[in-house]
Image (cartoon, rainbow, N blue to C red; front, side):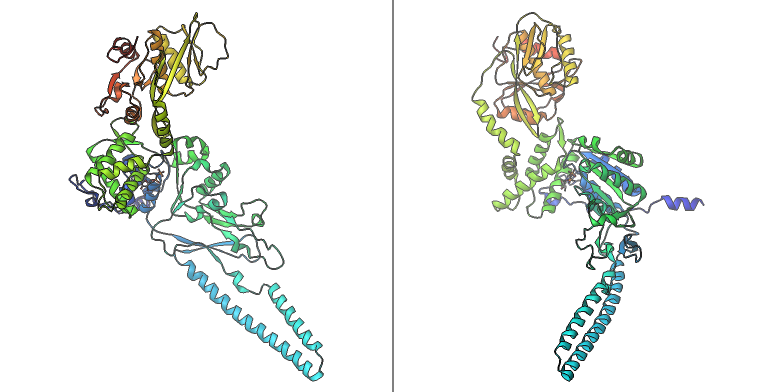
Length: 619
Ligand code: ADP
């Protein structure tokens, strides 16, 4: 007994892939870096996800992959397929069910056998068709013979006419009788003739019919010309994914109804195919159930999570794994090597660009560091890095160089700017031409839509007697509480009325703080605070001075994301003094720039007041 149970639960060991390779740290070009043969071993920087995927594949569990685009979600989904044992695949056939016209029958055959099965039908059909045609031909000749016979013996042309009419009638009747045996030939729905591994079906963005199966609309619904119902049946992605993986990215774009059907198919492991457009003739037809025993891999971005049907989500949560693909990885020697391996992989995958020198890889690593939201980490936005690799490769090809070198990657960095960056660069130039400084105005470094930029935040005070701080509408609740609490700590609470973007509904007599920023980001919050100090001490901050960081309720200035990118943006705009959180401390500061590291709001105030000479602040 025990033996039976053990056999049932121990899945045969799947091949372990390449023997773990030692990193070749002393490589000269990426050509020396071999790439693992299995897709799962090619996934870089997502160790936790990789481990979970291996378990999911082994135990046939479903997975929800959530993370930023280009971090390897579809790669991980495909990798499951590679790990699944290829066994028990079935071809699926649909055939006419004779009397129950609208319920076509479903049959399965071992993988690759469906074609032979159909061939048998075709041969039979062809045989009987040929016999039938011979027979009909014989009848036509006989009729013609009789007609001519009477025409010649009686000399009446009317017999010829009758003969032709009779042949026409016979032809029409034979068509009407559906004597054509080929219409009875079954149709293959799922064919695994050339399938080497478990199927991976990407059902991203499919409409309901393509996902769940459909019955083609038949324009000839009567008059003997209509097709047999089984010939109109089209399989859906869920049927093709049987015994494999059904991958759906951007799962939130699926209608709730489709998600409901998806859940039914997933739970029941079978779903009949029926017409999906309500008015169509196909909605009358409904096949027998077709197997849908697949591993479901859903993918999406963090905001998509809320749009997943709760029942579907709970199904995965209860019977599978939810995996978050990380946006950064530690900046270690090993991960830098993995990045070099990634470069090697992308080059081989692309097939049109030469290998990279070690120096060129270094520039890619530098870019990965800069793109990382967290300081001293490397980004895992591999699709973007892939774009940079291909652009650098194209430049090398253009200049007929045998290897991609540092200079090619540097040129590519200038070329691969996003639309937003290109627009920003235009704006930047014009911004530089109007520098002025004023009390209550400061530059802040922010990150938005993939680029770092400098934002001017100004705050003004309308002098009169105090009253209260009102919730500025554009700040989120958390920001508002933070700001109020901080002002309270600073002894300023009750003295200023804060208003964002000048849209006051309440007419209060008091000092009013106005700011030009609608944006409700924490990055702006800190700038507002700096401006409050600027106003409190009547200090104007120079135009080449910028601030960045997040601030919490206790007045601690927290680490800011994409710090390296922000410093670069500040440098581009000739900012020379930056106030930044201690948590971001790094030696990687552009030449000629001074960064003052602060930990608390008090440090911030002290810097503004006491170091004004050093910072060239005019009082
Ligand atoms: P997603 O599904 O998360 O948007 P993909 O898996 O489609 O991202 O990634 C797109 C391409 O970027 C992949 O084909 C691969 O070349 C590369 N890539 C993405 N993530 C990784 C990773 N973690 N390791 C190696 N290459 C990756």
